[in-house]
Each structure stands twice: as C-alpha cells, then as structure tokens.
Amino acid sequence: MQIDLKLAALIFDVDGTIAETEEAHRQSFNRAFEQEGLNWRWSPELYDELLAVTGGQERIHHYIDHYSPVYSKPDCMPDFIESLHQIKTRKFHEALSSGQIPLRPGVKRLTQEMRDAGVRLGIATTTTHSNVTTLLETSLDPAAPKWFDVIAAGNVVPRKKPAPDVYHYVLQELGEDPLACLVIEDSQNGLRAALGAGLRTVITVSQYTRTHDFSGASLVVDHLGEPDAPATASQGSLNPSRIIDLNLLESLLTTNTAP
Ligand code: XBP
Ligand code: MG
Image (cartoon, rainbow, N blue to C red):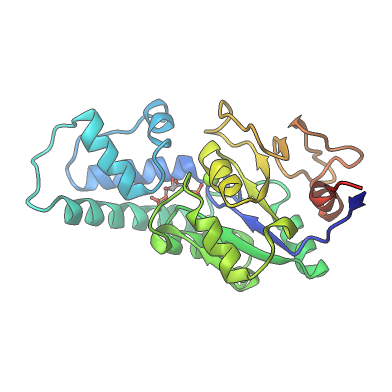
C-alpha cells in the first residue's frame, strides 16, 4: 500500500546550497591570514582538501596540526584561532554585502513556493550564525531570516556535520516527524548528517562537491532548476518535472508500506 505524505518542513543547508559561498569563504580566510601577517595561502586545491573538516575554526586548527605552517606559536591557541576566525568572518560579511554572492538557481522560487503552501522552513548549517542572516538579508530578502522557523548554525550543537546533531536539533525545534521533512544539501558531510537524523535528502551538487559520494540521497541534481533553466538529475529521477518543486519533493516522501 502506498501512503502519500504531505511535506511539513523543508530544511536547507547554507554553504554550497543556498549560494556558492565557499570560494568567498576561501578568499576571506586568505585575507584574514594576510591581515594578521601570516604567509598562509589556501589555494582552491588545498581548500578542497580542507573542506573535509567542517567549521572554520576547526578547519584552521586542522590546517595548523596537519600542514605545519610557519608562524610563531601563540600562548593561547584557542584565543588565537577564535580571533583569526572573527577577522575572517568580518571579511566574509564584506563579500556578502558587496552583492558578490548570488543565490543558486531555484532557491528563491522554492522558498516562496514553500511559504505559499504553508510548508515550514528550517536551516541546518555548520557556518557561523551571522553569516546565515547576512546571506539571507543581502541575497534573498531583508526579512528572509524570519521566514525560517529555525536557523541552527555553527556551535549550536557540540558536534558539527557529518555528525547528525544539527539536524536532530532542527527536528526538535520544529517538532515535526522526520518522515514528513526533507533536506536540501550539497556535500557528503551534509548528506551523512541528514541521513544520520533519518531525513531524506536532495543533493544540489556544488563547486567543491562534484566528486563527493552521494550514496543514500533521494535525488542528486545539478541545481534546483528554474522554468527557463531545467535541472538535470545524476542520481534518482526528476520526471516529469524538470525543476525541484513541491510536487516533486512530496513524491520523494511517499512511503511504500507492506499491504
Ligand atoms: C560549510 C562549512 C563552513 C564554511 C565556512 O557549512 O563547513 O565551515 O565552510 O564557514 P554548511 P565558517 O554546513 O553550510 O555547508 O568559517 O563560518 O565555519
Ligand atoms: Mg554545504
């Protein structure tokens, strides 16, 4: 017997999903290093490796531990990393405010469709909370942060993706059944976190995740699609639509139960 479920909530990842932000993050890290007189430079190739570690502070710590960059060791490493990351975050806000980072295709369209249909919206991200609100205000709508019933970011949970903590947190705040929710993600770490919380996931592949393993995703597409820019699926099926819309998302929720 087939049960058609209604979508109760759609949960978005941020970096690489709502917008292609990682290149701006990478450049913001490098500008912070330069401002602090550190001759560290994260090339796109190195950043691709470092992205395996989620969280900017954790990424800096990992870089220091595993790439042994030249610098004079501070008395207090946590304070040093936190201060460096705060500078980086300010640089990232400048990039956002200059309008350099557009939304990915379909994000504005789909969030509006969800709001019109009464489907709740959530955010589950590893990035810093102020990055989320600044991105939403500058690229979606000045009031956009209020469209989301929950914005779970950064250190709101003890363990970052691929741990499922942030998705468990969002589900708890929403009070919704995971079977009536869906996630939009872009990375392997994000997919593992969502699946770990029992959430079906649509992947929109991004600039730094083209080679990731998306086993377990309900659908993998190049982007959410627009009527004049159809999406292409590399895993799962988009038929008959060529964009990710409410009908397509609810078809992913349908559960086949024993008769
Ligand atoms: C991606 C991340 C973040 C960003 C950098 O987050 O792992 O760490 O790369 O942002 P998402 P911060 O879960 O949205 O894909 O420096 O603020 O961490
Ligand atoms: Mg992401």
